[in-house]
Each structure stands twice: as C-alpha cells, then as structure tokens.
Figure 1 (cartoon, rainbow over the protein chains, first blue to last red):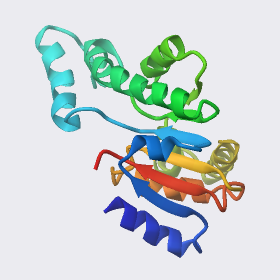
Figure 2 (figure 1 turned 45 degrees about the horizontal axis):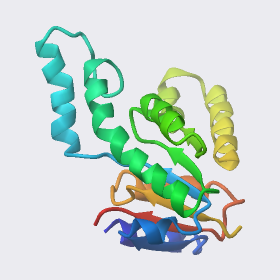
Figure 3 (figure 1 turned 60 degrees about the vertical axis):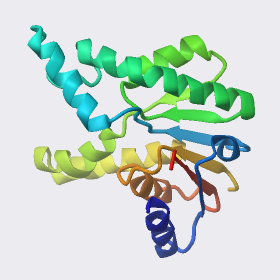
Length: 160
Length: 40
C-alpha cells in the first residue's frame, strides 16, 4: 500500500526519484549509499502502553516510558538487538553505506551501535524538529522567526 | 545524483510517504533510487 502511495506521490513531483520495494534485506542493502532506519520491533502500541504503565505501578514518575527511565530500558531491550542485526548486515553487504537512524530510543540505540559496530558510518536524528517548525512553532513565535527556522530546516535536509 | 537510498521500515504510512516529501526538498538527490524495505 505504501509503495502505491509513494509511487503516486513521485509521479506528482515529475518522477524525480526511482521507487522500488522489497522485503529482501540483502537485495535492498546491496549498493545502498544511504540507509534510513525507522523500524519498531514488536507490537508497537501494546508494548509502548506496557512500557508506560508497568513501571508506574512500581512507583516511577516517567511520563512516556519511550526513551528514558525503566520503560525506555524495556524499549531499548527490544529495539537494540534487532537494529544491531541490521547494522551488521550493512557492514557485511556494503560497508561504505551511511546509516541514519530515526528509531527510538535514538541516543541508546546510537550508543549501542557505536560500541558494537564501531566502524559503521552512522548518524542518529530526530524528525520531531520538522514537526516543531511546521506546526508548533507557528503558534508559539512570530512569522519572521518561523521563516528563519524553515530556512534552517531546508538547509539541514540538503546536508543530509 | 544516482544515489541509492534505502528506507528500512517503510511499510509504515507514517514513515514512507512523508520521507519522500522530505527527500523532495533536496535538489541534490534528484534522480536517486529510493528502495522501500519492510518485512511484508
């Protein structure tokens, strides 16, 4: 379904990109220059709910339980082993590729990747800064500053 | 540019289509191949 949506969007922008889809990791990673990881392992909504509520029952004060605290630890324990498998495949199949990680908990995943796969060319990013400039800042600041932020955002995308 | 960009986890509607919009903001990446990868 996503393939159809992305292909349709690509048509609207004059077929600027070539779109392909696969479920074969080996095939996808072969010859890749940039690999953007945004995977969530396990039943995301049910497990996130548990990450949030179970530590609270035992007296923690965390708000989300996604990236910090005990819930963040459980989340890390599910995410890190799987993402390290992907990173090892990247090293094996195409070691020159640049790995960009958006999966949470970003800081803990990146720390693990740095320790376990130290030669991987890797960067951890949070996409929420885009949402912040597109939606929330509009209500918080004046227009001029918003345009300034959008300019920075565009520059950041170009660098990536 | 003839880069190959792989999106892992692209089966998510919240990740695949918006990422294309992000990549579209870059002129340098025009002509690249975007590979959507997911488990199904």
